[in-house]
Length: 288
Image (cartoon, rainbow, N blue to C red; front, side, top):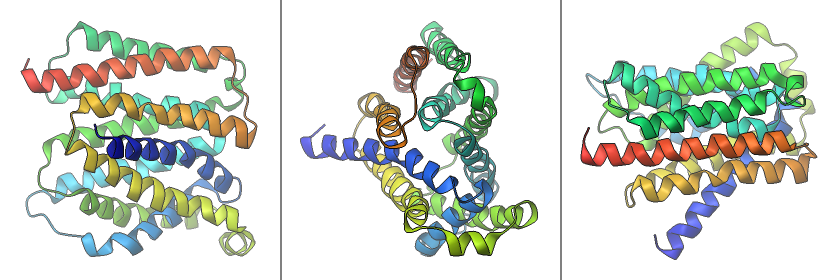
């Protein structure tokens, strides 16, 4: 990887690492469904020109959009609102082992013992974190994030089967499905919308804009750009830096407490996720 691309990867990790902290600040003012709705409406405003109908593939596109949009992100931001960004950053990585398990069930992929070991370590690490007394205070938020990772992995299974749909096209469809859906849910189940809009500070608006534009448009588009040029085995280990950056930002900017048990659990979980990511690429390349 060139120095320029390595620096770009570090920037992506910094963007993703800070995104949960920015979201946490905004979610201290906006309720989760309203926050999610505004985020996706902002994305629609930018990506609407990328919308394209894909004949014969719209069912897959809509399923992916539902999983990655209103359902997946709905649970995710509810989890962020109720939990600690440092914990969310690690637990959300369970999407990798979840997707591997689902690929065995639905795509009949073969998984050998090293990937099963990685999957086991991933869940063991999250269990270590979950049994930390500090985490008991926001265990509901952790469960929301686990649900988000599981739902997102369903979308990943469909993404593996779809072809010729660009990253911005998919992001546009996700936003078009998620924005109106989450807005309707927010209007039905949350209250005081206009007062919240009027009383929000620039910092709280900035958190929504950051997660919409920097995290989604720059981060996801950037990683797609790099994956077109480098092997997953080169990029996957580097993306695991984002949870580490989240912990650093969370502790220094929000004053979150990170215990020894949480650190040990995170190291176990991220090691397992790294094993799954690297072995997955080898099997894709060499066959079962």
